[in-house]
Image 1 (cartoon, rainbow, N blue to C red):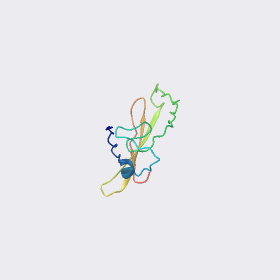
Image 2 (image 1 turned 30 degrees about the vertical axis):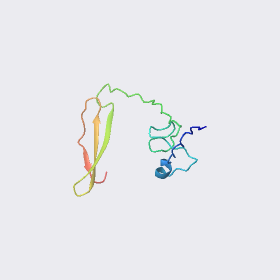
Image 3 (image 1 turned 45 degrees about the horizontal axis):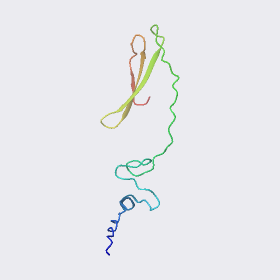
Image 4 (image 1 turned 135 degrees about the horizontal axis):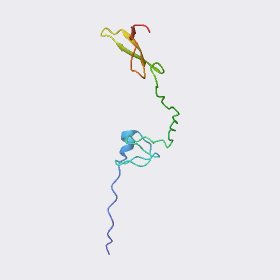
Length: 105
């Protein structure tokens, strides 16, 4: 009497071990990706970052000269020398002082 024996299962090559350097004990993400792993095969952290509570409320200017805004702008010339520009602007009227430009501010 002949009994049909199923063929042996094909040997599965551990592609992750050869390509990503993972040991046999570590799990290998599949092409579709497993939960807990990113697409590069590294374990994703379950820690979530806390969002900061914003307690800032912008103030509206009611008259000229009440609130002033300041800003530093910096850039470099074609020869590589850096310079800075200091701007002061009135928030209500949008008028500004003459910008101060210098190499050392």
